[in-house]
Amino acid sequence: MSTTFDPSGPAQHDGVYGLPTSAEQARVVLVPVPWEPTTSYRKGTAGGPANILDASRQVDLFDLEYGRPYEAGLAMLPPDPEIVRLNLEACGLAQPIIDRGGALDSPALAQDLARVNELCDQLNRRVEELCDGWLERGKLVGVVGGDHASPFGLIKALARRHPGLGVLHVDAHADLRVAYEGFTFSHASILHNVHERVPEVAKIVQVGVRDLSEDEHLFSAGSARIETFYDRDLAERAFEGEPFARVAADIASRLPRDVYISFDIDGLEPSLCPGTGTPVPGGLSFRQACALLWAVVKSGRRILGFDLNEVSGNDPWDGIVGARVLYKLIGALLRTNA
Image 1 (cartoon, rainbow, N blue to C red):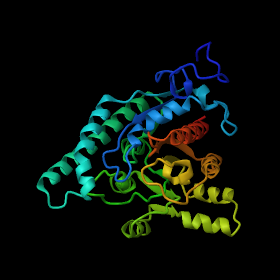
Image 2 (cartoon, helix red, strand yellow):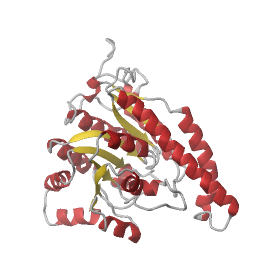
Image 3 (cartoon, rainbow, N blue to C red):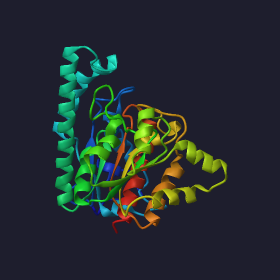
Image 4 (cartoon, rainbow, N blue to C red):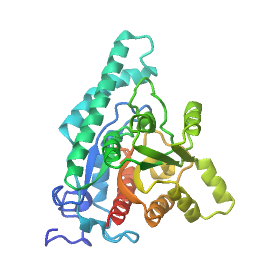
């Protein structure tokens, strides 16, 4: 850390949280994935990493729960030019398909759909390659999306290293669709793809889900590897007087020892993420989300990595909340890897 760096002063560096740390010096490396080709309602999540980066420079670095995460060294990489290129091409091809609700009977759109699926596959491989490189150097790695399709490569890379990994999935949506509008790697299919394509993931624990299709509900109910704490059920337990701390401890207890956290910002109350692509009434408060992370830490489990996704690039408030959720995720990651 630079001798001129003052953690209590205003940001004087352009790194994440105003830190002067390079990726080579950092213990935690954040991989931005500005990606949104299959976003099916409101666009903007490709700008999420930049919005979070900008807002992070206003976050106080001392944290009452996690102390001084910044001391470990935190760095966000610049956007990868290959990912930027893939996103640009895929967005141009995908939008007419989204506007029609699928390729339907159009041969031209069917051809474009096939190309978008190829580009999504390339994105997955590129993210896996980037994350693998930093994991090989002994770094702790997080992905900052981008839509929820963004982190598949990191999940795959970590699960390959740690068979039996569990995924804690915070989201308003189940994301268990086989495909959506024909897109195999849709943001609405990320957990289905993890379930079906990453067999090393032993358990998926979903929290806050309140908007899903009947097919997703049946798929979840039929899998021994998925356990869902629906928003409705969380609310019922609260109405009956159960403290959230006990609920959070219960959720943490269902996870294997090694945990990956996939945090969709729309898992929070919409007032905390008004610009996100598909907001849904209900959801966790900021303090409940923090309590859930703390419960995982207290349970003795080890967090191996995380993603934060679906933060809008169009709304400053989304960036402000996202930057603080990100700092909590980093704090929990470091605390369980001390």
